[in-house]
Image (cartoon, rainbow, N blue to C red; front, side):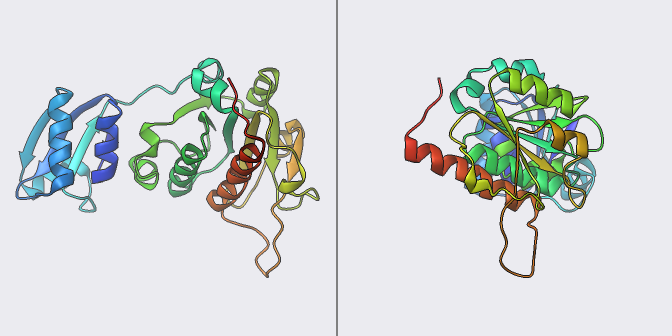
Length: 248
C-alpha cells in the first residue's frame, strides 16, 4: 500500500482515478483544495474519514504531512511492451530511461519534466533504482499520476527492444564530445540518463545510438540529473516545434 501525504499529490491521484482505497483528513483543516479532495473522493466512491491530528500522524508514518493522507493500492507498472504499444508512445515519440537514479526527489522531478515535455513514459530498472514512493510522488507535484512507468529487469536489453520499435536511443554523459544540440532530436527518441554520481553504466552506454553532453562553461562541469533531463527534453520540444512534427 502506498501513502500520499501532500494535498497536491492526493488531489492528482483522485483526479486521475488511481486506485485510492481511503483518504484521511485532519479535523479542523479547511480550504478550497481540501474541499476539492473531498468532492473527488466522494465522486470516486473512496472511503473518506476525518481524524484527529495524532491519527493522521500515525497513518502517514510521519508528522511531515499536509493534514491529508491517501492510501493507494500499489499499482503494477506497465510492461515495456505495453508502454511501446500505447497510444501515448506513438503520439509523442519520446521516452525517458533512467539508469540507476536512486534519489526519489530526482525521480519525481524528472517525471514532472518528462510529462511537461510530452513524454509517453519513463522506464526504470527493477533494482538499484528509486521507485514511486511518496517522496517521489510529492517531488513530481502530482505528475506521477499521469505518466506511465515501466519497470524492466535489464535496461540494456530493454534499449534493444526500444530500438526495434523505431526509436533512436540517446545517452547523456558529461564526457561525451558530441553536444546534445548537434544531433537531430526530432525523430522518435529515448533519452537515457545515468544515476547520481555514477552516470551511465558501460553496457548501457554501449547500447546507445548516440552519447551526448551538455557543455558547461563555468567551474561546475556537470548538472544534477533532473536538471540535465530538463535541458535535453526541452531541446527535443524546441526542435520538434521548429519542424512542427507530431507522431501518429
